[in-house]
Image (cartoon, rainbow, N blue to C red; front, side, top):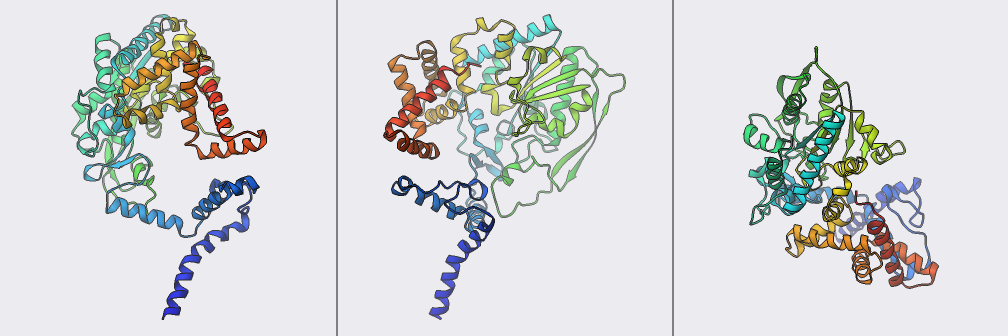
Length: 488
């Protein structure tokens, strides 16, 4: 009996590795350059051997490619979610009644990323300048839209950790107040959904989605185009809702959070509300339109709404790539286009941001438009520095993390960093400014194991120490990411 048990244990231990390595018949070995699914193992050198780099790389690849490893991870994810109600996906948290949320939406709803009244007031002020100029001088209607999100609409189901600021301030509340005072023409869909649609007999934001469902998307589009028709005095096509029906099969976005959690099973849901639409285009105006928007606008495309409403339309996804976009060689980048020509091709430009993006809404479209038409000289430098930070993939996440860790109001942390950005732009060689930014980037480098490996290699090549290579790299980052980087 003991012998059988021993044999079973040996098989149980060795079989996963054996199954995992069978695939290496068609893959390079551990000491090659590339392993399955992008796992990289550096070639053997004595430096890597004595610095324990080879061991760590081999261990991580062995774990990654173990035959039972994926199953065990998914099994653990299943137990954590179904029993402990703790999703293991990055930034995903469980709310009440089975609702799932992304922490980034909660950060906005609770005011954790509140940028301050001064910054948000300037944002609306500059938006109105561009809106008035385009209409008066170019005959172009600029339609800004504030869209809701999963946290604001499903706030009754938020987790207990979603604690709002004591003063109750959020980017949305301030933007709403400032917009009202400025008399800017802006569509506030968040208020529309929370005051006029909620509660609804049909699902607006599915419980395991980051986006509105098809019915919520239809309501948003119908409201948007009625607002646009009234604003522009154009008789636009009408969206006609033929029916709302129950489907057992979700659209890709309706259970996207749960699908991203790498579970063993996805539980069926019987209440996916889908819509059947048609469009009245007879004797209607169908102008050219440009959408500068986030992923919420992609659902308009899924329901074929823009193609029926406009003669021609284009989506600039996050004001970065031209839709349909990809990450391959055929990508069309907005920065490669002639912005002035592209603006003046259109009759209507929609600027659309959901609550995930209020703090950086419209992704520098307003600022760049002010620049090409000569209005950028009136922009406040402090605003430009703050706008630079909140749109930075390098600075913003670390600043938010620092703010939460030290319990500093985000607007205060933003103000402090903006002053350091301004000082760097004005006098990049100042020793105290250089020390601040070199320290900042050094801390980032030491958290990046891949970059540290590369710098370790450079010590061999340059006959230097790791500290020297890290310092040189921090200065390079300071130059590229702060000094030479454009404000917008």
